[in-house]
Each structure stands twice: as C-alpha cells, then as structure tokens.
Length: 92
Length: 142
View 1 (cartoon, chains in turn brown, green):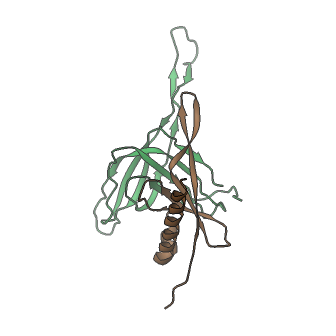
View 2 (tube, chains in turn brown, blue):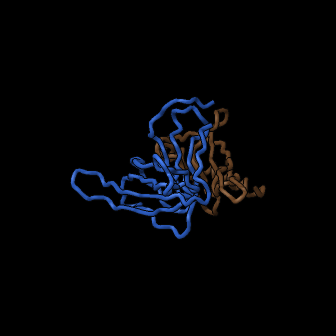
C-alpha cells in the first residue's frame, strides 16, 4: 500500500522567559526552542519544544504523537531534525 | 488570532528539558502557586488590629502530577541539576499558534510509586519545584 508523501515545514522559535537580577527582571532565552510545524500552505501550529542540548529530540505536546500516528510523527521528527541542523549550520 | 475563552485542562503537557522521562499525565491536581509572605510588624504600641506588610520574596509552591504508571518508562530520576520545566496549557481550543505556558528552572522533589490493586490503573505521583532562578514565567497563548 503506498504511503502518503508528507513534508512538514518547521520553525524553531526562541522561548523567552524572565530572570530576576539585582537590576530588575531581564528577558532570557530558555534552553529550548518552541517548535511550530505546518504542511506547505497551512498555518503553523505549535507541536512541542526542542531542547538545545546536543542529541535532544522533540518534546511533543501531549496530543501530537498519538493523533499523528507513527508514520506522520516520524516525518515530523525528520523535519524537526533538519530544521535543527539548518539552524546549527548557520550558527544560530 | 487567539480568542479569549474558557477551556478545560485537557491537552496540557509537562516537559522536562534534561530528564529523559515522558509519560501519560492523568492530571495536574496542584498547579503552580505563588504566595506573597505576610510580615507581622505589630508592636507594643499597635492599636486595634495586627499590622502587617508584604514580604520581599514570593514563595513558589510545588506542582503535583498524577501520571499513569508505565512499567517501561518508570518515573523520572532526580536529576543532578535544575532543568527547564515547562507546563503547557491546551492549544486545541484556543485558536492560537503557540500555547500558553509556564516555564522555568526547577527539579523533581518527589516521586510516588503506584498502588497495585486489581481492577485499578496504576497511578503514580510526581512533584516538581520551580527553583526561582529563571522564571517561572507565564507566557500567554498567541
């Protein structure tokens, strides 16, 4: 049985929080990205978080993995890994 | 464009930045609490009622998770260092692109193995504590 060809577009967005300092609260980037994904032409939607540490995998929102099923979720993971590699190659 | 409307907690997620544990969360019966301490500044000359003033530092309560225990996953270990912990609110009904979340550094302070009984799911407990170093900060859905 043929499998659908799915290609996801992924955006890794900085996750900004606050840290209190003696000079007042400052914005800091958490050590993870917010991961948004969509199919071409669709609106992006958050699917989880990706820790910045080496080798880390997508931490999906609770409904994502089960609703997508193994095939589509695998495609999403591939797209997230590719987005990470692209970000690292540009030194971001 | 996100629309402001009430929602249930179904679909919420808790993620740990370092601890390699993920499981099925039944619920979060105790979410984050922030308490402002009350300092008693009454003295012998105070008349009427006790006099108080707000404290300096906010106290952060522990967050409690009920999780379905899965034998292949177990429960999270006590990581050596604090890590980023993120509680993400449900996204599906808000019409938003990114979900509201509370994120900050923290650590696991308690795990409770499940009761083992016939005809009952194995329900375990995890309690986490934000350490106040970074966050916890609430970011609204957008």
